[in-house]
Image (cartoon, rainbow, N blue to C red; front, side, top):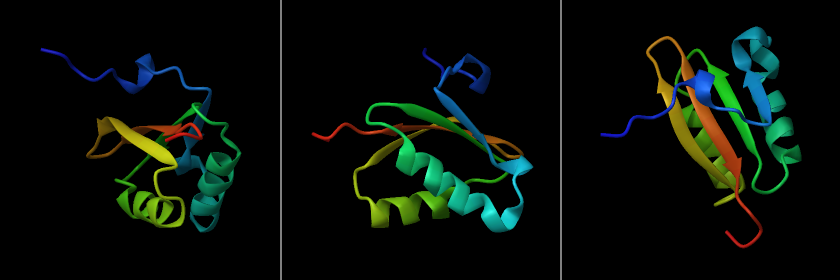
Length: 89
């Protein structure tokens, strides 16, 4: 049986810890960081709730640009590995 690694075992290039950001700027900060993420690079998003609406928005605006992999899925903490897909994806 395989298990997903815990957030502590993930070593992304970048961590976005949203609970420390003021709520009015969270989504914009996340979008700005992901926009600057080079192809094939990884960011780890830490959140205090499931960020599915954010993912739906990203997929609507940039279809197939990112891959999302839940490392932790609540209930109080969510950690999601976000990989920017390469140009051929």
